[in-house]
Length: 58
Image 1 (tube, rainbow, N blue to C red):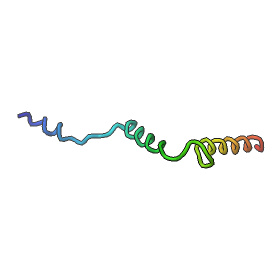
Image 2 (tube, helix red, strand yellow):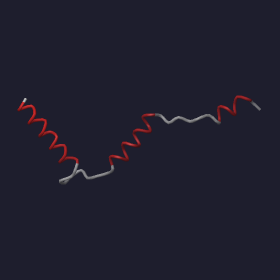
Image 3 (tube, rainbow, N blue to C red):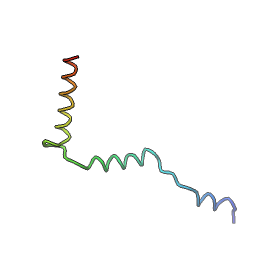
Image 4 (cartoon, rainbow, N blue to C red):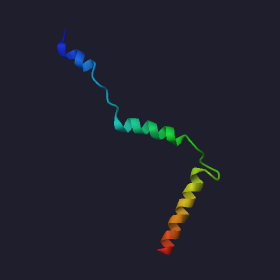
């Protein structure tokens, strides 16, 4: 009926950048452990210790 309607309905859909990234980040966040030797908090403590050492040495 309306010649322009079909082109609008059949157009390419684009994902919102931030919505797509949020999904990827939440999937990545569910991997690994928070605690323990290989956990996130242990790595955070190591990073902070390295930073403190570089501040003292610098």
